[in-house]
Every structure is written in C-alpha cells, then in structure tokens.
Image (cartoon, rainbow, N blue to C red; front, side, top):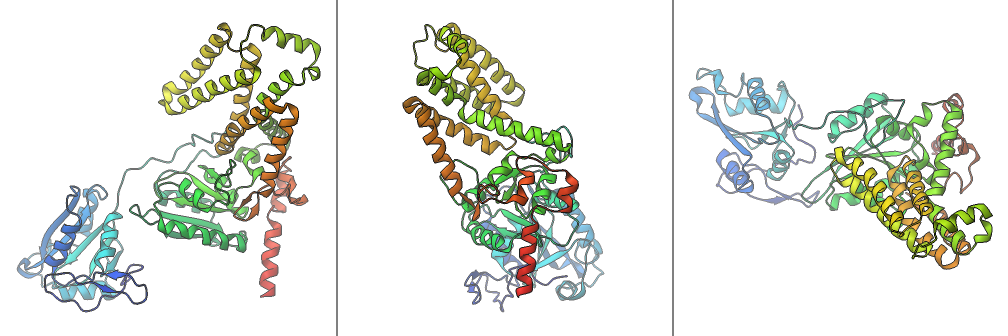
Length: 528
C-alpha cells in the first residue's frame, strides 16, 4: 500500500476551524489545500466545488461502536457504476461499513494504522491529503472515501464507462492479416500493444494535458531501437501539451510538427496494432491519448505513406507490384488533370493524331476552356466526396456513386463538360483512393489545383516549375528533425529494400532496417 499518490505532498498540521487553509509547496510552487480532520469541513469544500453537478454523489455512512464515527463516499455516478460502489463497500465491510455492527470497536485510529502501514483491501487504494488532487481524482472517475478525524482520503480506481469494443479497422481494411483495431479506451489500446510486444524494453511514459480536459497521453518506444537524439527532440516538443487542451492525437501532431503550413503530413496515423508494433520495432515513437482510437507514429517519412501492413503478409513479388501501382497512382492523382490541360491547350502536337481528333470531337460545342472545365468537374467531385463522408454510412456510399453518375451524365448532356474530362477526373479520384494513408491523399487534393493553374498559364513549362518547387519543399521538409525524403535524400542504399521494392522477409528479419540506429547506439554506449 502506498502512502501517497504520485504528486501528492504530505500535508502539514491542519486546523479544525471550519475553513480550508491553503499553503504553498516550496518544491513546486503550487498552491496546496490540505484535507482537514473534520469531515464536514472537507465535504463542504467539495460540495461547493461540485455545485450544480447533478451526477456527483455524496454517500454518508457510519461505522464503529454504536455507529458514532462518520464517513462519506464521493464519486460521479456517470463515471462509476453502482455495482462497483457496492463491491467496494463489501470489500471494506470488515473494517469500515456499518454491517460490522455496534459491537465492533473500530476507530479512526485503527483505520489510519490499517491503511498507512500494512493494510490491504480487495482493490488497491492510494492515500491523498490534498483537496485539489482529490478533485482531480474524482474527475478521473475515482471513488473517494473520506473519514472523520483523519486528514487523508482513500482513492480507489473504480471508473466504469461503456466504450466501443475491439473490432476490425474501418479505415485500414485488409484482405489478409490481423483484424483488431484500437478503440477509444487508452488502457485497452496499451494492453493490445503489450500483448504483441512482450519485452521490458518497450517503454511507456505518461503525461497529462493542460486546460480543462486533463487528457491522459502516453507515448511508447522500444528502448534499443529508437534513436536517442530523436527521442530527446520528441520529449522536448511533447512538453507543449501540458499547457493546452488536447482532445485528439491530431492536436499533438500539430503541436510537434516541423512545418505547420506544409501540405504534406509529417507523422502517420494507424488504427492497427500490428502496424503500430512494426513501427515501434523500426525505431518510431507511438503516441496514444485517452478518448481517441488513432495511434500517432513519429516521425513519418514520405516513402512510408505508400506502405501498408498487408505488404508484409503477401509474397515479395505481389507486394512489390502493388507498391509500384501505388506510386503510379500517386503520380496520376497529382498530375493527370494538369497534364490534360497542358497538352490540350499548349502542346496538341504531342498527342497522337487519332486521339487528338477524338478529343476535338468530344470538346466540340463545349463553351469553357479546358482549365475551367477541369476546375468545375474537380469541384463537383470534391463536393460529392465530402458529402459521401459526412452522410450516414448506409447512404453515404450510395449518394456519392449515384451523384457522380448523375452529375457526370448531366454535365455531358448539357454541354458543360466533355466525356474525356469526366474520364480524367474519375481516374484522378480513383487513383487517390489507392494510397493507404488518408492524410497524404488529402495533400494530393490540395496540390492538384496549383498544378492545374500553372499548366493553364504556362503549359508543360509551368507544370515543371510547380513540380520542381514541390520537390524542393520535400527536400527541405523535416519530421522531428529527420529528412522527410529519407532514404532517397539523403540516399541510404541499405534502406531502399523497403521503398521501391519489398525484399523477402527472411532478408529483412535477419538484417533489420534500423540496424544503423542500433550500431550508432552501441558506439555511443562504448564511448561513454
């Protein structure tokens, strides 16, 4: 039994004057409100603090000879279920409940000795002697028990809130491989990771966000895999969450990212525990938060956004071909509309004659230039895609498919768009769906429009200028200080085996990809 919960300081002597005295902890500079020995004074302070909260419960009860000693249980009934409270009473009935009867000579001094020295109970309790910490414990779903004539309180972990059960991932579906995904319960997610990483080298460190939410955030890493400089940089940046509200891991991403205004994501997300564990073994840092199911993987490099967990469950040839397909789809999703605009407007001589005649026949009678035609169709397509996401799931996919067919056919019939433009926009949308990571696909949706504008102004030359600017931005971009284009720039030959191609697993498992990190750590230890 521990005498104090983490961060709790021993209270100085208190005065039973009916008011809560405050003092300052010299070590931390924080204001303290120590518990008083008089139960009614402590209850009065808590009742004032939780005023107008309909779900707060103050349950008074008595114990000891002739039931003359009083105690009170305080908890949120929206966080703590009634059967949990009853179980706690049964667990302590030999000591603290009125069921022991008037003949039992249990006093507050007995309770102090029991819990402060060698006492045990069915559930582990921590002792708290500060009212501010007590308020945080109650807000976190703890069951708090206060006794008269004792300036400490018992805090039991008793929260019981219904959460979503572990199920198959919706955003990262696979044909072959594990089906489990993370949920909104932090302890369940940590348990799923621990179940796959059965090693004490898997470290988990917890911090608490600031503001009113007090969200619990945990980040994990494998000690001998992660680079120490990377970990130190991450810890320096993650300290920012102690001063702000955090509701989702996306908040953390935006706080620790290197370039706020870059269209490219600098960290990855996953709902799959197998993918998170694979990233941890590769030297990444996983960040989880209470109330959200997504795991943030830091850092995220450009080449990793084309990888899927299923790549490592398929044979080498199949995985390599699928990865090439994703790279081609990335180029199509980024450049196809702008390439069509540049060729049809500025460089028709580069188009084969038969295809050029087909395009001219299809565009006959279209009142809009190719750029405005593409811009209009892209706008309609993005509108339908967003509507499909926001609508209820049973009707969302149907509306997006039917809407695309109806609007495409209506645009062709009305002479607003040509059939070839509908094909170009449809191919662009389908290509963006093949990329495993959703956040990199959003970047393509943004970059597509500057490319279209540059192609409409300067043709192929404008496209090349825009692509060179994007490439320069990618070369300059960093993720937690790591080069975003690694291992392509800087060039690392040993790591290319999992970029363009995926070498056989027997080679990868015998020679882990982060072997250079391990050697670097060993050299540093030898130097020390």
